[in-house]
Amino acid sequence: MNINNKNAFSINKEISDKEVRVIDADGTMLGVMPTSEALELAYKKDLDLVKISPNAVPPVCRKADYNKTMYEKTKKEKEVKKNQKVAVIKEIRLSAKIDEHDLNVKIKNACKFLSEGNKVKASIRFKGRQQKYKSDGTDVFARFADAINEVGTVERAPTQEGRSMFMVIAPKKT
Image (cartoon, rainbow, N blue to C red):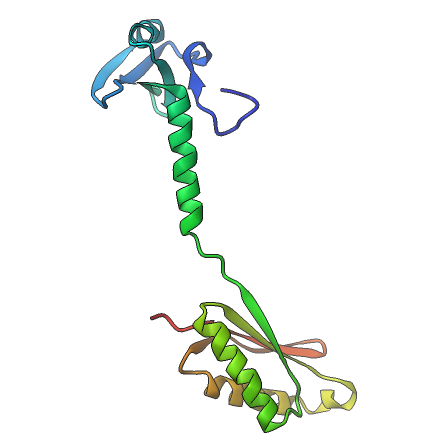
């Protein structure tokens, strides 16, 4: 196997197995044969012998153009990567003594984030004497969760960590 590229396939003389299962360029199975014979068949058609499944017994090799095989592999990897959706977490900071209008603005922003498909982490940081009144924070979170229940669901209930309390809201599946 090529040391420089961990994704590379073993080709031609790099294949050290005694016997390999050979697949023709058009996809037909040629069967199990010695590696030297498989190499000769590939060279006659001006192709490479590419080991595509090294863990099989015997290893599976295909007669193909190596550069084309690598191009198709990278193309598939890019396609898979393109179709993945990265979950983004947006944070909204609230306070234990938040005013109604301010809470509505935060709710509006959270609904916008959730409708875009992002998760929302709502957090409250307790300052000074507010730490004695943790129930105020729980009440704010309850109002917040009730207001956004149309577009999101609480994924992680309000939890306390030190001076902060937070909860995570995920968008509803459509």
